[in-house]
Image 1 (cartoon, helix red, strand yellow):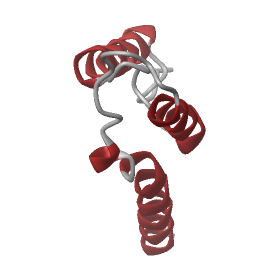
Image 2 (cartoon, helix red, strand yellow):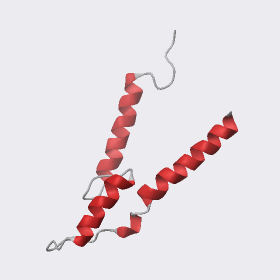
Image 3 (cartoon, one colour):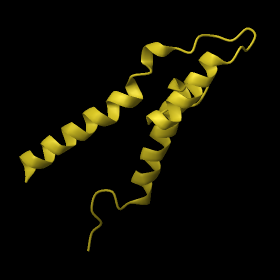
Image 4 (spheres, one colour):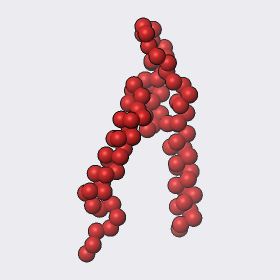
Amino acid sequence: MTKGLGESGTQVLIVALLVVGIGLSLGGPTGYAINPARDLGPRIVHAALPIPNKGTSDWGCAWVPVAGPLIGGVLSGLVCNAAF
């Protein structure tokens, strides 16, 4: 019996290394945020604390961890309904 897509350990390793590579290259000072719980808390604390010589909290991209999962959920639901 042959293995299906995603059952190979090499494929899992490639996807994991891709996620780590993207996170290391694009992640901010708090790491790469893939959900609001990981991103908004540190961003709010960084904005509120009086740290000398701190940079901006970069609120311009704070919507991405909120909108990304919502848009992905809607799109995956549409694809599932279209496929089945």
